[in-house]
Amino acid sequence: MILVQNGKVVFDSARRFHDPVSVVEMAFRCSYKVNSLSALLGVSARHLERMFYETLGISPKAWLREQRMVRARYLLREGFPLKHISVFLGFKRYTHFISEVQAFYGVSPVEMVDMEKKRCNRLDKEPVHGMPLL
Image (cartoon, rainbow, N blue to C red):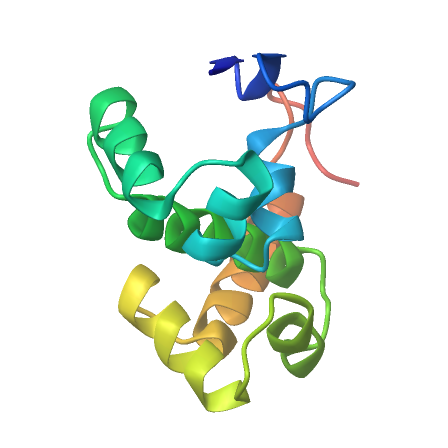
């Protein structure tokens, strides 16, 4: 049995984990693959699916996709090159990464980067608490 609290594994009856491990970090270690995650946790893919539906109401595949896209957006915001992000997140093809981001967020990664730059520029130009910019 595995108990998770605040995204951390806090108890594992089979003692597969010695320290609390972020479930999000486990997703990354498993390259966002359901079979790899279930193997790491020592449960069948079907049991993992039941656990996810009971606790989160979604499939492990949907959750892993979401985590992958959240990390992609973070890396985009940090300014990493698109091709590096696609390799880092385990996409076999750069074009697959582009289409996944487009499908998930509704904009391409390039558009997302442009939107972030515009947002940051707008925030830089706004006065803070009524203080005029010099």
